[in-house]
Length: 148
Image 1 (tube, helix red, strand yellow):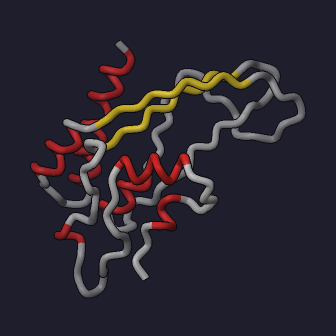
Image 2: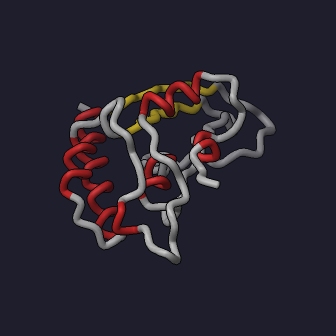
Image 3: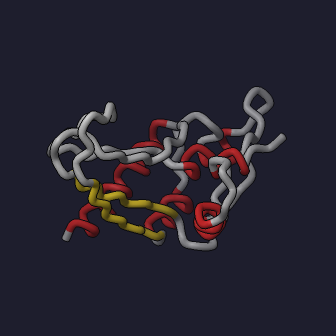
């Protein structure tokens, strides 16, 4: 099943990201394994004359989200998912949002904080993200988390 394979991949990617940061945070890995997966499918009709990102058939595109930026204290930057129609073909987009449990506070991993790299973001949960997404606030969620 697609969702099962994407879930396996998310865990592998998350562990690879932690490794790239020289972290072995078992408790963070476990929370992520217990987390949520939200899948959305969008169908975009052809849009002639559009000048958008070309469709790459057969590819899986992975975008880093806000909580990964928070965990890494900005070493990984979040990217907004903005799929748009293009060309002569109907475009199908399957987005999969991966997160820790709904009310788990995601915050900077302490080992990444020091005098040269102070905490840049406050912690938040998936519920906080979803509330913001449903609100009329036009700011990117990550902007609302920045510590002054």
